[in-house]
Length: 300
View 1 (tube, rainbow, N blue to C red):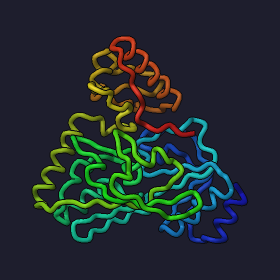
View 2 (view 1 turned 135 degrees about the horizontal axis):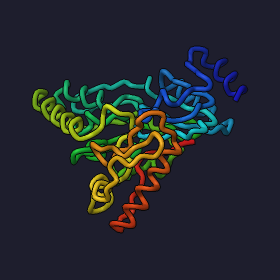
View 3 (view 1 turned 120 degrees about the vertical axis):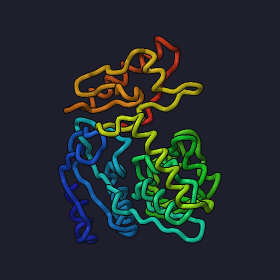
View 4 (view 1 turned 180 degrees about the horizontal axis):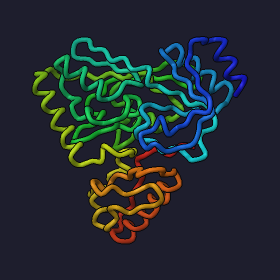
């Protein structure tokens, strides 16, 4: 790790780097041990150099956006965390909006609204970043990224910049081309939208946010929906049906407001959440015959 740090400092003296980072400060779950090193590139050139060096030196690497769909190990993370949130530009040309990987989905939706472009209102309340949203084809309230995305630029391990278009994204439910090629790094994505009235788009965004606020435990630390939607069912409804609302392991609890969420009620450990997930899965399978699969990403 020391040789990697020396190499990066020599080539990129202005790059922000922090060692022994407390991952509780960088995830919405407020859970996790310390990471060896976090780097925060300011632009594509810095990001490309770091990405290439990490792979040349064969170091473990993790990509982190807003940390809203991540559960970090209590033991922390060995290797390099690339924190992407400084790459957050969103631009509009005509009916096309382009967003860098670290931009929040809410920013992308707001910029589209201000430009009188509709089609991203569903994304306004999703707490993640654009890169993560493309990776998992994020969606809500009947909309998903696959509905609007037309092209995505990414890096291969060797730093080569590539682009995919349209059907090449291979979007599916909570999957994409990038879940099948997880060692690629999404740089930016573009969507072609339709024109609409800003007031109508804003009203739709506000309605979605209010629905989210009224039904989800937004004021408590969580990683959003824990489980993927099983075919023909809703995970939260199945969990509630099994009487699991309020079930607690250590500092982790099934939300009384929305059973599809696990919340950190104070001092929760990764081990608490994993144990609670296991209990939920076993109970739901035994009582309903439905297998729940996790949506959150466990790292470390």
